[in-house]
Length: 426
Image (cartoon, rainbow, N blue to C red; front, side, top):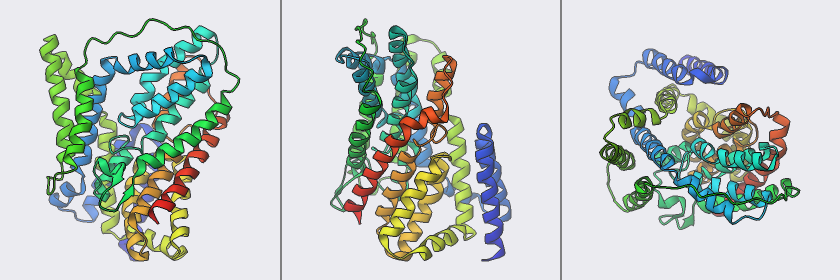
């Protein structure tokens, strides 16, 4: 291993340790680390610019903005009210909320989904004088599970779509390869994992009284969200389109939504609120990580990691198994965004070296990393958000309490996905 490769590897490991140790400062860690890579690897401005995937950045920012407008319209709360009105008791209400959490999370950020639905679970719990802990955990882990179902469901899916050249429809059915995509794999995992929730909540049979429905007076954000999905599907059929097409679609619709709000309210504060709605923490973190990953690639670190895994075995099933279950283990403790961003080029190189279908490894990586984040309370941002909400309500959730639900749920979902991805893509 060359000296520059060793230096870059040590640099990368230090970066990762700091990302874990300083969660509140992750964007700054990533950006400073990127700057150091730029200096000692002598990156040009052009190399830095093209290292950042601007389609991913724009797409995440635009989707966050549209989701903010969607939440503000109270449409998710109304949909949740309608679901609860159809449920006979607490068990079915929580199961329905978890399924609804998954449905929303396939198109909306996981954290935003938890923020939408947690208040409903809290209201039910207060009315019946029961603990909301299990219900909010169920909402959080269901939102994480479905994040891998569509191109816009999670940052990891957006990263995968950009790396593998996948469009919105490819997550449902890959026409070029004649195989079904991650959407149906995730749904199969959700069905099996939901059966675990039925066991967890089997004793929660208290009746629920229906309350007055939430009133929605503005349906434009809902239309914008639907248009985003429709336009992303339409863009899937355009050949030789600009690399930032999806990003321009989402950002364009967000800007339309903001100006519509201004025209409706004649209040300039809507622009400030819209700007605040974008999660710059994630945006800056990703920008730094893109440059860091470009740095370790240029220094030969990615080659060395790929060689190490390739030498472990040349058997496609063993390589696939390593990718999936190492991803589960790592994502149980590490935010899956930097992990997936790091491992996608590694998976590509392993596929090239061993002759394994790269899509088998891509989907195995997403299956393990996204679904595996549910294993522990710190494995995903949605889990941390849910626990934070409970803490504010006076409920301290131990790792044991969380994992009593999350471990069987996660293992059921990941095992199902692991088997199906192998059967479909090997």
